[in-house]
Image (tube, rainbow, N blue to C red):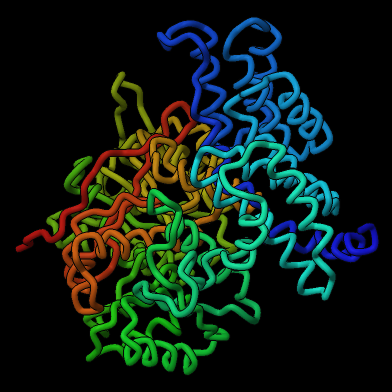
Amino acid sequence: MIETITTVNQNLRRVWIACLGIALIGWLAGTQSFAASADGKSSPASLEKSAVELLNDGRYSRAASIFADLAARFPASPGHDSWLYNLARSKYHLGQFENAKRDFADGISRFSGSEYTAYRWFFLGNLAVRESDATGAVGDYTRAYALAEDQRLVELAFESLQSVMTMAEKNGDSLPDFKKLIEATFPAVGARQSAAELVASLGGKPTGSDFGRGSDSFRGGKSKLPTVTLALPFSGKLERYAKRIERGANLANYYSSDDSRPVVYFKVEDTEGATAKAVQIAQRAESDKSLALIGPLTSEEAVAVSAALNCAALPALAPAANQNNFAKLSQTMFQLTPSPQTIGRRLAEYAFLQIPVTTAAALAQNSESDMEMATAFSERFKELGGEIVAFEIFPPGATDFGAFGERIKTRFLGAYDETAILIGENGDTLDFDEAPVEIGCIFVGATVRQLQLILPQINYHNIRTTLIGSDGLATPRVWEMPLQNVKNIIFTSWRTQDSDNSVFRSFAQMYRDRYGESPDRLAALGYDAVRMIIEGLRTGARSSSAMSRYLESMTLHRGASGNVAFGDEHVNRELSLYTVIDKLPKKLTWTPPRAIETD
């Protein structure tokens, strides 16, 4: 047995990511109990609720501190079991593996019959895999599987157990010793089926490494599920981005049903980052009657695929491509990431209709994206009836923005005249630079470094305004600057996550538990794309043409990446807008209009 397991141990670290198996354990078990005090108002209950929220948001250090404090202060509380379990979970995510291992094992011995025992065994299995302890992993996963009452934990424990077995089989090792271990452990725990049945079934279900990769779970053979083609660059320099989208898609597929079974069959196609290959895959997906296509990744590929699908029924959801107007090339291409042009227009609509203001200026660096946003902002603002007082594009190395400020002041104070006498509000004589002026808003498309030069000059020229823009404004380094003349900062940015977005919080916890890291926007976009397809299926859209109609008519999808609604142009028109209060971002409530009549 020692020789058999030694060979497997050499490869277990490669299984660590594939069968990480943490998947949803925090979400399943960590939120089951909010302490013993049922009224929810007592100090322990309030503290536990706060700690669970911190844990689910990935703030593990703070969560661990609160759970440890609760356990120390209230050792006789019925909630002690829950606190110690979540403390061990926090340590696990912090990378304190030895402490977590000790705490999980201690919890098993201290709390007989605990609702967390199966979860503790599961985490111990993960830690055994990390330590290349195949024997320990098989034993721990077997106990977790036998004791689990939650169906998702049953599935996850099975997948993780099978991963260890599958790796051994791939290496040509004999499995009898592992099977004997399972047969000895399983009945001792008190299981729902015979050990022989468990061992026999280990060859039939998908392993953790196959999770979501087109496997038709628990069916065997060719999938009977609707096919969704993933057309992404799974090789080459963009592979890591494709993998993130795929991970998010997998989570949506497997955890959109109560029994954790997949809802659609993923046909995974590698575009290799090549436009011609992406077009071939899209055309093949159309002829093979795929329900939908997710991809491609880049704007260049998306333009070509959109044109190729011009007369097709296949809907394609492009997660990250943001070039202007490519969705117009086809009746079935849908763009999840708003283009710079869309962002600029929506910001103008918010400024004119919602703030509301009638005067504005635009200042942007000469990058393609910022110039497009500034131009779209200015044109849309004027279409709505507003006045653009000043418009300037500057090079990246610019440091002097005085001329821009002077143009704004000239509009309100008249041309600069050394002999002119300007009187302030308290009757004092002011020079041209000191005299205050007020303009509704200034669109700023700039980096943080550039904003650190621009904002002091706005203050110097005494220009009172609201700043509106995109990513450059979405940082504490800007919010913490002296902003005496800035009434508000309003921005949109995917880098700022909405703390009130329960969909993102749930998704982020699932992602961290499954993959051991926090998700990025690409993963959230993959998750949202599949969830929209699944929602369409549940409304009866079971053909590609019906799915296209569903996506076009979808009024609002509340997603992990933010809200999504396409409308006639098939470009996501929803923006998450934020302001800054007490140097922290606060989401603004606003529904952008589908269309606005202009004179």
